[in-house]
Length: 257
Image 1 (cartoon, rainbow, N blue to C red):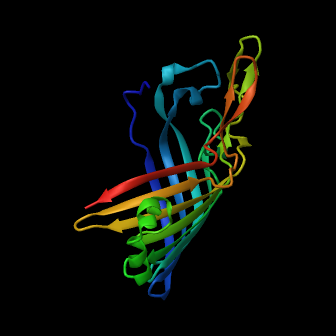
Image 2: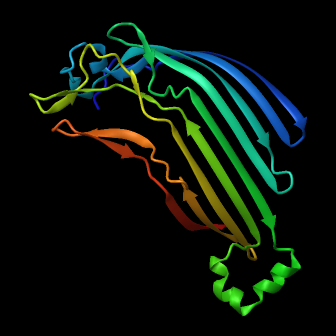
Image 3: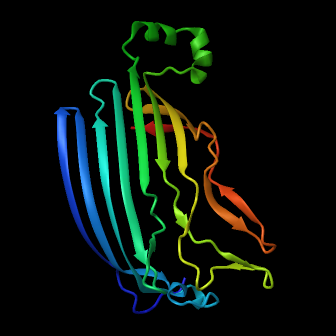
C-alpha cells in the first residue's frame, strides 16, 4: 500500500465522564459517557475524489474527520468463591465526514449496540475424598481423559451481540464485468445483519510437583448462527454471503510452570 510522504498521525480529542459503585467488595458497577473528535484520519485517496475509477494505487492521505459519542455500562462480579460474571453494554454512534461532499455518514465501526455476558463456575476437586479415591480406579486411569473431571474444573460461557456494521453498496457495471462504488454513491448506507454467538468452554487443570496441565474444550458459536462477515461478488454480477465460522469445536492443552 502506497503512502503519501506527507502523511501525519491523526488527531483525537475526547471527553470522558464516569462513575463507579461498589455495592459489595467483589461487585463493581461502572457507567461512562464519552465524546470523541477525530481529525486528519488516514483514508484511501480514492475516497477524496468523485471519480470511481481513480484508484491512486492504494495511496493513503489524511482526508477524513469524524466524531463518536456513546455510553458504556459495566457490571463485574469477581470470583470471590467459585462463581463470576461480567455484563457489559455499549450504545454509541460514530460518524465521519464524506471527503467528497462534507456530509456525515456512519463510520465502518458504527455498530450502535454491543452487549456481552460472560460467566464462569469453578469446582475445586483436588481435596475431595471421592475424587482422590476415583483417581485410583483402573477405569478412571483408562477413561479419565474424556471425563469432565480434574483437580480444578471450570465451565464458562460467553454470549456476544453486536449491531450490524455499515457498508457501502457497490454497483455492478455489466459492460465492464466489474463492481464499483460510484462517485455519487453515499458511503455506508447499508448494514450487515446483527451479529451474535454463544461460546461454551470447559477447562480441566491437573496439578503435578512443579507444574500443571490444563486441558480445554471450547465450542464456539454453539447454536450455529449464520453471521455474515462480508459479501463475495464475481464478474457475472452475482453476490454470495461470506460467513464467519459456524459451530467450531476447539480442544487443546496448556502446560504451566
